[in-house]
Image 1: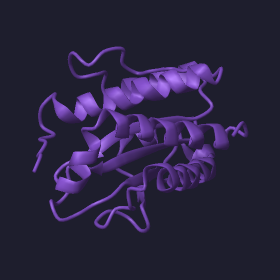
Image 2: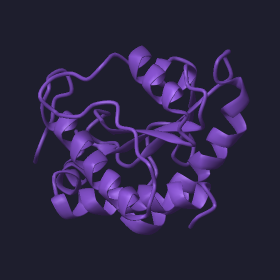
Image 3: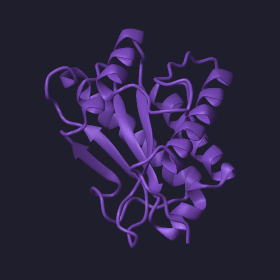
Amino acid sequence: MRTWHTKQIGPEAKFNFHVAKFLRADLLRDGAQVTMTRSSNHSFGPCVNRRAQILNRSHVNVAIDIHADGGPPSGRGFAILEPVPDGPNNKVISASEAFGRDVRWAFLRYTKIPPSTYDGISGISHRNDLAGLNLTTAPKVLIECGNMRNSIDAALLVSTAFQQRIAHALEVAIMLFLGKG
């Protein structure tokens, strides 16, 4: 059984960055312009407030935060965290929910990982406590691609081939959301 710890720069950060790099390459191949909020995995990236500023100033059409969860070892699956209206993001709530549906559909189709058994309903969770979601002015979701503390999910998440499959699912969702899929 593989276990990951989220309190250090390590496996989760490595996973997040690898998937983001694969996704970036896929989107660039599609002709998209891509804004990354960190350029390396050598230390912690900018704080979530700064990341929101980077995305807002770049005038992105859609944004996604890529993560792997550290839930209960018995829990499996992905969770898509969506914003709730709280000021700066009020205008993008319905678009964020539509994007979340596209991500859920693509994730189910291309990764075969199930929706979370411990977070949200059918893989969707509305959150008011995540600055990255609440400070955005673009449609945005955060995806927990699986549970690092669950042995089945962890075995998938450390696989480069599976990370590429995740990136492909996210690429499909983004292109679908943008009307180019």
